[in-house]
Image (cartoon, rainbow, N blue to C red):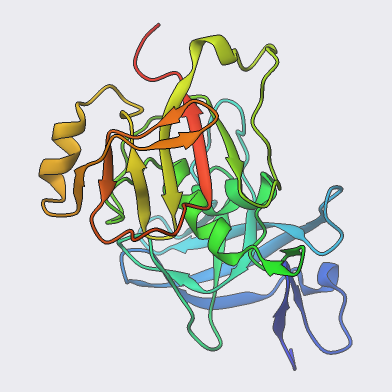
Amino acid sequence: MKGLRLDKGRLVARSRTPEKLVGAVFQGTASDGQPVEVALCGAEHSPHDPSMFWYRIELWNARSATWENPCVATGRVPSPRALAVQGVWDETGARQKVPGKFTFACENGAIAKCISWGYAPWATKDGRSLADLHQACTRMARADYCGDGRSHTHEDNPIDMYDDLAVLTRTTEASRGWNPARASFEAAWTPEGAWCLARTRGGQSVETILAQCPGRFEPDARDLGDGDHCAVRRKDAGTAPAMLRNHSYGKGP
């Protein structure tokens, strides 16, 4: 292939449509740093975003001498696909801009979920890039309060998110999948992690989080408006408001 590049959410090559890239094998690096071969086995146009394709990928497993889907399956998504996303995420969950490299983000992971929720990093709204909102969303999705890559949630823990650009707005009416009366404010988010925290999603004490990243937060009973109240806030957060907030059920039946 010649002229291969990533155009927003799809791979393109000179004189080839995304579907005609199927069969290509990429030389990549796994999240543990080991070299891998990634085969592009399918390309499906997203019905919700014309700039995006879902890819079916397989990794070569030298031990079993077979090609395998590297994406973790769930009951809800038993055959997960992947998105091609510009940049590389390190072990702390931080996005790095690396020329010539992109990430195959699995459908059940935070990077792809946040794009599906509306925060495509290549998109804009009202003239503002959504790249930072997407990064803040990846922190929020994993309840990465300290911004160090550690998750404090579990699969299928419901959340409701809303942002300062109104890409998503707060859910006020009950549905089969969400009951606002059961939920309460959890945290406000930036690309570096929690800007402030009211409680944890998994039921751990706030003090447990403070011990995991000592010196990062300080007590601050701040009112963010709309009934959202912080218990602690980042020491270096300044006066700039967080760009993303969420409600969740917390620990309970």
